[in-house]
Length: 160
Image (tube, rainbow, N blue to C red; front, side, top):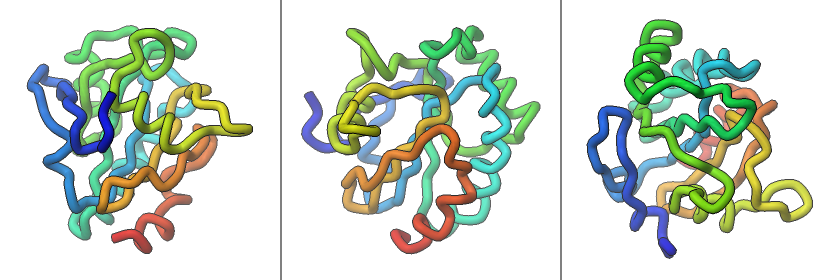
């Protein structure tokens, strides 16, 4: 089990292995995403937030997941095309993962352990749950899917 977020290895949406360590010194907003969800339009605000704050040190990391209502059924290639064509997504997207259950990705094991949900629960409740990580790699907060990305702008700016 990863002790630090920077120990975690991930696979990008093109299938290349990457380390979260490459984002050391950056503020991270990590989001589990889906293409066929009522919250999918949040991609627009995520991209706006990324364009505004990426030059100051924010990275948004999108992790597609098909565990909630089977709302991310496509391949990684389909997901990448969907995000670019419909929302102009330029922030890093990663290969589809599980965020709950026996096959939970190590990144989400760490995120859920560090920032528990309502009443101390660890499970992710739905698509577009957001985790905010500071420049030192500490998981600061978990936000519900209903929290719109631009509502986090001021909090993120304070961490930059």
